[in-house]
Length: 423
Length: 203
Image (cartoon, rainbow over all chains, first blue to last red):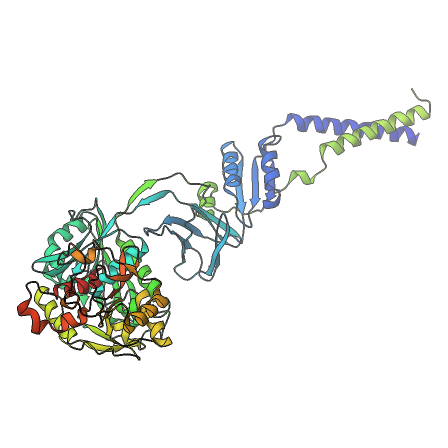
């Protein structure tokens, strides 16, 4: 008698399970929530996009999504699956790579990252440099001129690629014949700039290098005006800057009425060199005489010595002006330490580059970019959502197991009945 | 702005001061033909001193054997590498002379083999035009020294730029005696000195 009851019970349970499976298969999958972490995300994305369509997915992001994964999740969101994410360790970093207007063809990489973060720059060939971020972020100059870079601040990686190339025009140097003009021209040429020069020599004639072309933005990326002899071109220079040209100008020259529209600030009295050459190799320009600049409105300090502004810059309509307070920078090139020659070239090239009016041509990025991973994630998927309430249905009994249980119960009932001779 | 100062190099061997009347005449002629901001007096600067790097134009001359010290060689190499300009003149005007042999050996040791400066180089038209290359001196034309009229200056060049001029033409004598000879000479021989200085200041 108990055996018959057991057979009936097995039969009943099997029927209940069959009905439950039937009902579940007929009901829509509303309320399904699935979760994944980065390790299982690739497999989960494929599943969510093919055999399952959960109402909501929650992704735990500990080290940044790849652009492909992020875009896939956005696409899932467009297909009526609510996508949420959470991650405690994501650093808010951003990186952008741009060509530097320098004839050596370097790539500048500007990185925003929390102060103190260890930042690693690499390109397709491997690691280029690493540094700890300061309060204002990090600026790298990659002399190998990579077209695409990766910036890693664990656990996040930002990717950037060049989107334009530069067309560098010529530089015009104006001044009197002397050591400063000679060595400024030499350093710029040795750096790779194409330089025209008009150097005043005598009432009967000047020393002219290059074409005597009109001073306009179509030919010149920048003008370097070294002393008062440039006053004879003041009207043209002011017009050139207003129309978009760049100007690097010796400090005292800006105090003249002719250059008043380009004034960056007031110039103080000359101060003797702070130290002899070589005494502070990291700050070689301390060994130059300086006329400090008191900044005017709209001007910014580009370089300071102690608390004194040595180089300042401002925008003037479409152009840019940089004023140099140092005097006789050629002394640094001639008398400085081992790095003086290279340093003088780089410094003058950087001054010119900072104001240069360069042509830009758009190019296709050579690799996918993700310049601000966290910001992009928030922009595309919204802010973080808490992981509470997420239950993974896959943790329950799978349908295959339920089917096996049903089959086993029915087989048990059939076998029992046959053994006892029941029909 | 720094004034141009005519600097004569002091080396430890030989007679570096053999043309002591030349600097004032060069300064005088620069003042006559240009508006360069000039130091009215030249300076003598030791080749092995750091002071050398305050004067990017240095003149060397002499009659006697020249053997630079290690310090002088090191400084001169650095001086030229940084963009300094060296003007060397053989006061003997004699390619078999001891100054010529020893000085060219020293220059070759520091900078490599001296080359002929092309006679159409921009040096010859920087201010005054010299269609046939370097102007001859009365010492050459009178047959003094080696009795040769030298058709080229020699030098150390990179690309088209001259770093060192080496002359066998004895401008040291010609220019030193300008005050005595200028009334007998149609063309001022010092004009080529203007070209050399202006070239050094602009290229």
